[in-house]
Structures are given as structure tokens and as C-alpha cells.
Image 1: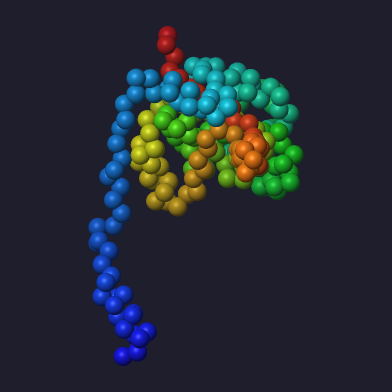
Image 2: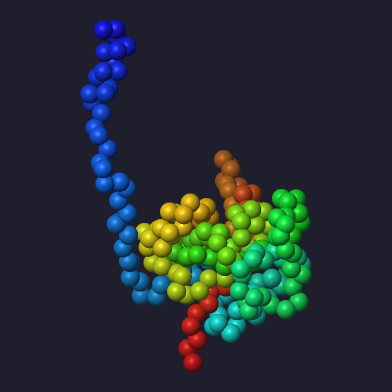
Length: 208
């Protein structure tokens, strides 16, 4: 037996068979917070993003406030039309806009799949109302509407909610504030890898 064969034989004998049970996904749990929504808002604002809290009948007005300085707005198919304020210059994405066309649009308006209170993160799985990934990566502003029941305590809870999306092979976009990076001299640059501005509309149940 050659030296090569001896080495390979030792490697094979040292290998441990993988468990037959597959990947465990029972690590998810629920973390209780005194005020889950307040924590989510605080975490999102830590990323220099804007949050507007509103009852269901005030969503369109809140969205209009977020888009006050935007001229053209992309809205993906499936977005709730009752959340769209009047007077917007809406740009459709059918047929799909090119990257250069999207770069000329001021903002994109989407909903989301889940929000995470612990980290202030918003997750999109790009189903109805969220559009394809490019829509939320190219325009300079992203306005996202999220309902209170979509906000969970921590990442394991979010992973549990996203299990169906993962199993179906859908892409996931995790957003924690506007896009930013810092170079070796600690100079912060915003808008490098995605929208530099994130504005969130959080829809809460009416108290009346």
C-alpha cells in the first residue's frame, strides 16, 4: 500500500457517519418582552431608520408622510391597495425594470414577512407585496409596512415563521436599517449595498 493509500484509509476510518435524523429545527422558542413593539421601534431607530406607528385606518397617510420627498415609487404586485396614498407617481415592475431604470426611481414601497424586536431586523421572503429582491436593493429609499402581529421577539422565532419560505426555496432579505459600510479609517458610507434610507410603517390594532 502506497503512502497516499495509507493516508486515505486512515481518513476513511476516522470519519463519523452523519446522523440520520437530519437537521434539527426545534431550537425555536418564544422570548417574552414587556413591550415587544416598543423594543422593535427602538432597535430600528438605532439604525437611523424612521418608524411611524399608526392604526389600520392611518396607513395610507403614514406611507404618504414617508414618501413626501419621493417622486416616482415602485410598488410590487400584491401590495395592499388600501395602503397606497393617492397622488403617487407609481412605476410598475411588469415587465421587470432594469437595474438602470430602478436606479432612476426614488423609492420602493413593500410589505414584509416578519420583524424581529431584539435586532430591529425586517425580513422579506419576496412573496406578494414584496416583489423581487432587486426592487429592494437598487432604489435609494425603502418604505416598508409591517403589522404588529408580524413582529416577533427574537431570531429563533423569526426562523420558525420563515420555515415554509425556506422549505419552498424562496430568497430571504434581512434588513437592519439603511445600507451602510465603514472603511478602515472608520468613515461611514451609506447606500453602498442597498437603499440608504429605510422608513417603516408599523400598523397596530386600534385602541378604540
